[in-house]
Length: 493
Image 1 (tube, rainbow, N blue to C red):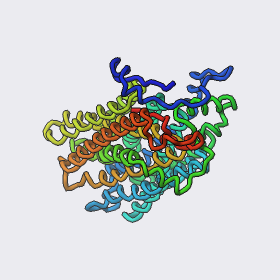
Image 2 (image 1 turned 45 degrees about the vertical axis):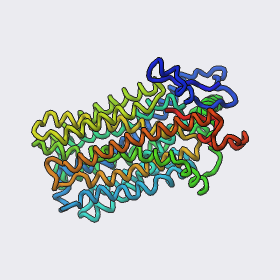
Image 3 (image 1 turned 180 degrees about the vertical axis):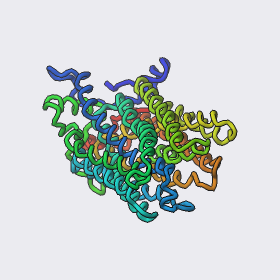
Image 4 (image 1 turned 135 degrees about the vertical axis):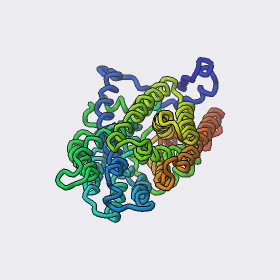
């Protein structure tokens, strides 16, 4: 029998539309084997998987955006950056970061997560350390480029790995907790930078150099430990017994069908994923949010500095909005999982982001209100992003479509990072009207894309319920590798 989803209200729960959002029936119900307690097993998986990935991505995001903290402590003046050279240094990170998303996820599948992710982690930590030793603009460009190369696989790889462990209805809290690493990194980065800034001049190195060196060395040290503790896919997880692995595989098969872990990904498989228009819509959903997200991450300290605070106070004032963003993101995720619904929990946070931009565009003489608007920006943007990625990612089924689709969404979406880096220019101080307007426009683009995706998956569910899917005549063997294109599959809305 098809699983019926819970809606936003009691009337919605009984409606036909949510009934059509059921998942396919799979052979062999996921009933715990003797001696297996499902709740305890999932807690065991949570403790082994999530904290490690959260720390990994916290360090990755910290190493990526700590340049904004370094800029407050003299990076621009020491390297004699003028015009848009600082913005260009931010931009060059995204070129390899975008291009290597899909290849990285394919390598993740081939080499196993514990090996590939720990290698990448060591390399971007080393690159961050070297960034603290550069002597000119060209050296900064080179290190930022290679930082993008080695960080390319972190975000999509971790999301891909999490998606292969959890059912769709239980994934959002885990995704948001993981994604909350970005908010925690922002908060931690501000506190750490304020502390490191106090050793400005130690051993002849300016404070901005120590930010890169110490944070990079920390990442390299942790990477050696993570080689042994990063969890692989369920089929290869050594911390589970044979019975537990079989149970995890069965419960996931019941939710999203066969994973096709053993099937190799070919170029034809990769290109085949892009025949589905929803893949492109998913990219725009994330793309629209990346612009305000990176705009805030890279330029919040610069914006705060316009309020007339000292460098140390600027770093400390950057912490509370990040902390509130983490709490609000977890609230949104908990409600989204409770109602087994995603669409409205993308629109609500995006609306908060839009209201933050509206205040910043309209108000220029009230620092308290402007500071409050930064809270709205951080809370709205960093709450909507994990829902958007989780919604799209967990609606993709099977290793092929999920690995390629996730990497595509994140890779394409991060083109928005390039736009964000040129949105806030020194010539626009102190009001940054251009940057706020661009962020507002792209937040609206994301909201529109979410509407299109919602309409698309709803229509597809109805077609499949009427037996009008393009794969309605597929054999059982063909259905096994169709993933979410299986005519028995129903998309979560």
